[in-house]
Image (tube, rainbow, N blue to C red):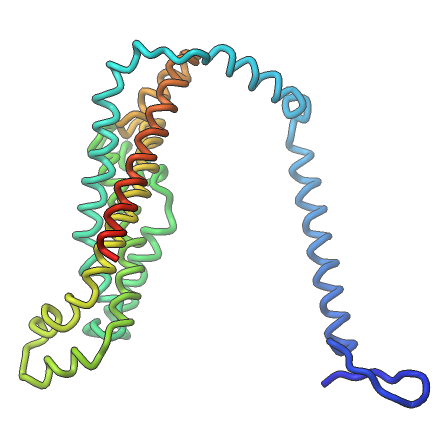
Length: 272
């Protein structure tokens, strides 16, 4: 326990040693220096005139966007339906691919911890590390623009997310149930079906609904790069400075996200 001497020959308790205090202050000094350096770099590449003028520009855009063009709603039903389809089909395809990857990545179900598990973990990390917009840009260059590119982009982005949470749930199962089924002479597939799957079904359902809720949000912006959905309408309205249409599209997106949040909350509540 660190102590320090006090007048009179006594000793008093100290929270940190002198070396720990110096290290702590050195860490603060390095952090402040990094912040100042980054702030200088940001300031040098920022046109501050536009920053100070931003409130006026925002007020001007708001005045132009009010009121929303409600008559434009008839042209948004199909795009919002495409957005829901992108999110739903993308989540479905991701789950189909994520389940086997999760079983191969979990320590207690993988056939090989030194060969197959690293490959499964690489798939999880690689699909999670790239944003869905970037996947959409790549897929548009490969298969062309449209809803199909958006579905594939959402599904690839979701594989790592779903597989990671699912393989963690597999590793946390009660092994006594697996041992009991194994003791009956069940095959490896029977152990998976009757010992592992029933234990992870609630987690699987929760992960599915949660990811679908996230994909609703992500699919609304995929149209900005040409991957279909309501984002395509938003992009075209922004390009033509049709601010009343932009306001209506943002309202529709907000309502769709709120409804998806309500649905996912109800489903998760029923599962839990």
